Image (cartoon, rainbow over all chains, first blue to last red; front, top):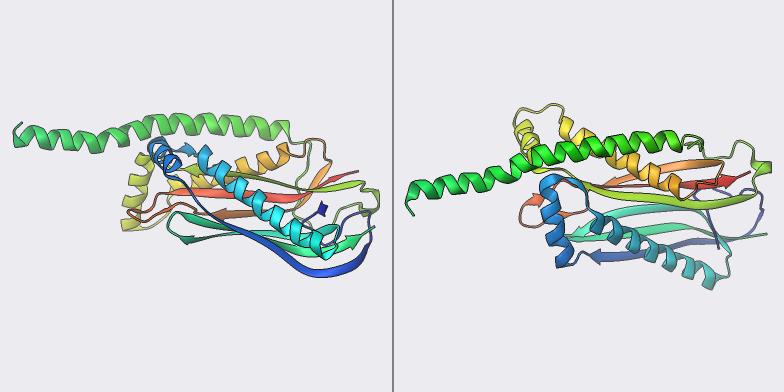
Length: 104
Length: 153
């Protein structure tokens, strides 16, 4: 599965177009991480727990998008975009979308 | 325990995180900036470009989506300074350096995923404040997420 965030896959031609595909996850952080982050907050700096949590969820969203593209018979997704929104206190939604295409 | 000592203890409990935040936070930020600058030099051979189209589209052999992200939080001292700033308005330098660090770190992590690439095009950077705490409002941490398409010629 090829993924790019530009409109084409360089060096390949798009033969078919399947429309938009997307994947999303809503994740809440668990209490343990929250307490650690609260301590880390005093000194500032990177909150590794949150970084990991968000990248895991983003991978999950990407995986769901790829799954959807695969089920349509596509072998690439172009023009991929990510977006993040916080839906509730302590939970974030990671959303990824793109255009499923066939290339050769 | 009489009332006087209790008040003093309470003041200490509030002051300790702020003082610790000032010294340790300052030290950590300095260390982070040194490491950012070092790695920026190290990875300078991979150009990151905001353009949508490759400069030499016919020569591209491989393309891949790459990304990097980081969550960085502000220390207690700076949070206090920022809160005071809010009264008078103006530049909040404390937050400027926070977001600057987050974005540069995210770009570096993205580059780390594509060390053998010749070029990364169509860079997008997303910033979001992810950890909203229902009790105290925002706790002052931001996430920066950078992504782009890595190309090999």
